Amino acid sequence: MPAPHKQRWTRGRSRRKRALYVSSPIGLGHAQRDIAIADELRKLHPDLEIDWLAQHPVTTVLEKRGERIHPASAHLANESGHIESECAEHDLHAFQAIRRMDEILLANFMVFHDVNRDEQYDLWIGDEAWELDYYLHENPEQKQTPYVWLTDFVGWLPMPDGGEREAFVTADYNAEMIEHIARFPRVRDRAIFVGNDADIVPDAFGPDLPFIRDWTKEHYDFSGYVTGFDPADFADRAALRASLGYAPDERVCIVTVGGSGVGTHLLQRVIAAFPAAKRRVPALRMIVVTGPRIDPMTLPHLEGLEVRAYVPELYRHLAACDVAVVQGGLTTTMELTATRRPFLYVPLRHHFEQNFHVRHRLAQYGAGRCLDFDTADPDTIATAIAEELDRDVDYRPVETDGAAHAAALIAEVL
Image (cartoon, rainbow, N blue to C red):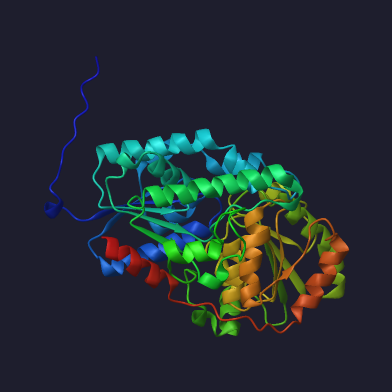
């Protein structure tokens, strides 16, 4: 028989404080903002040890930063792979994909459960860690440590072509969440919305349910947006461009779809637009960044076109570019908004967050030009790139203290 499991308990006053940070693996945006928040949290608690329970592609960023990745991370079921398997041609029914990953979320919660059975933490932080938040509310007796929840959107929303059935199911999911919070308010010691109240959509959670903005203002604190960098550092764009190898007379276009593997079709569409865009703008230099989950060798390679894989600190290149073409994810679009660069964004079809939540937030800043993938043929994209290159932007400024504010809210729980 195997030896019985042994567990040692160390008195809290005789050890450093420890936090377990669970960061969503859907894209790289969570990783960047979570690192920024962790850095600010360490300033407030220099003795704090942070372990990360995370998976690829988040671990790519964490490893480069030298962060402590918990060994149990290797046992997490792959969420990004599931999301990618649900994707069609620039089409991801995000709500339905989440509904079909119950077994993955449960498996990952059990990894979290086992880690906390064997080790002592003073704080749990979950950035859109759906498995953690849902199963803690389903099993509130498992909540043994102060817990902070972060998110940049609230409310599942139905797509118009989902009909009455999808409207019913999204409302049911929302109603369950509302009931969880009302019945077990002690589970979340603090809930933080990464943004401001105006960034919340004006919709209701569903028939006979409260308005999302009103409910969120009652149940969340607001940190402001977290970029992970200070746009003022890029005030001298000429120096920034020179440091990145961009010539003064080049018109640089960055094309990126974030850290997930669901953007291949958009990259192919923009690559097909490159020859026409180059004819319109002879000085155009287009750089396609595939991210860590798309193999650059799977894309067409045209003369004069640059294709790169993962680029560390991509936000510096976005700040230096003359125009960008991106998907509809919040992180990349807000990086471009913060650095005041013109950009085109093409939301994934049926992705409720990109089509409703992100688009609403960008409208608050007056940022970006939205294209519909169905009508954005290569010639349309080429024309739009040429038009956006010369557009003067007048975006609302993005706050720079979001990470510090979020860390201060978390520190109060410690």
